[in-house]
Length: 254
Image (cartoon, rainbow, N blue to C red; front, side, top):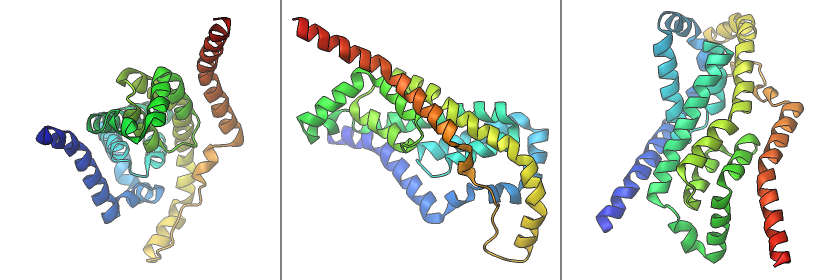
């Protein structure tokens, strides 16, 4: 049983080890608009000549970023819009983010399952049970409202014992609005990047370490978009509220 338990923990240990290595080496810092601009010409040539391979490489890298819970998924989504256009970039990002999230969900679920919630105490076990009963609605809310860390929403359902189907469904649907917004932002940034490219290139050539692109990436999340995402999140919780209301009426009637 000890060896069996150790075998279940090995995938999680591998993920933590790889994530630690990436962060320690600083490779995650390469997921930026500066990196995209530095290699822009080469990337455009490759995408034009090998579109399928470029999309495949992009999806594979995106999956690794999400599965390892490495900061940079926002940059990846914007880069997808820049390189492949809004539609293809958004679609590739949605597929990759869903697959990456599912991978770390299954790894965490295999390693711990519901055991952690049960060991914390009966209150945590009860909360986990309530989460499982309406997992799709709760997860859809958490995905739609972009204030919850993506990696945390991947792990909590696994520890609560949520089934695979509602996790994948809610993730794939819930990330569509924000992902499309970022991909469209990326597609629109191409001309702006070209306008600043000469100045940025001159800064790099001068050997300066403070070269930056003057883009506010969070500008994509306008107050209107955030309000719309929150409204969608509230709609996702309506089935839970109706279910609770009906259960309360039945208890009172009984």
